[in-house]
Length: 115
Length: 116
Image (cartoon, rainbow over all chains, first blue to last red):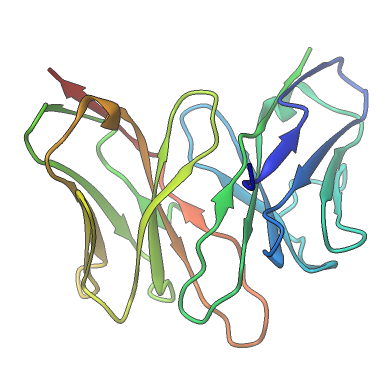
């Protein structure tokens, strides 16, 4: 299977704990995106990387959220001091940059529940 | 403010008939558009896309139409099949010549139900 993979698929944590999610993109893709999806809404863009460079992070929801892509391959999204409002599906997508067209392929997501 | 709007939360269509899903956008900087299909507990699956230099793109049973002057696009599925029952998301993006771009902006989705 050469699609986008995410781990874990589900995470239950207590309020105040830190959580980290991993995303492995399609191998030849140079761009990696993180989104959050809550019930009844479409995915909401958070941040993205081109290779190892984080080119946009102003959309991260608060300073409790951070993302890394240290070697330009897999990425991690960390949420510190989780709150109940962080409960959502966290989606990762990857793409190969092309002019006028950029198809992003999504992974299965990590569902987070903060108690 | 919602830059991408899908005004129909749900749509019910008989099997074999045409399904038409609509999407409106407000940001004139968007220049490529995508449709994704999503089943519960899964990530969105890419269906079809169109860039702003075209007004139609077809792939098998799926056709996307773009009306730039009306800032409107639609997805046609012909014929509709039971496996098409899912939530469909319209998404829009903005290419950026400087080497960076924001992610996609999504609508809230339309739940398509294909009835036998």
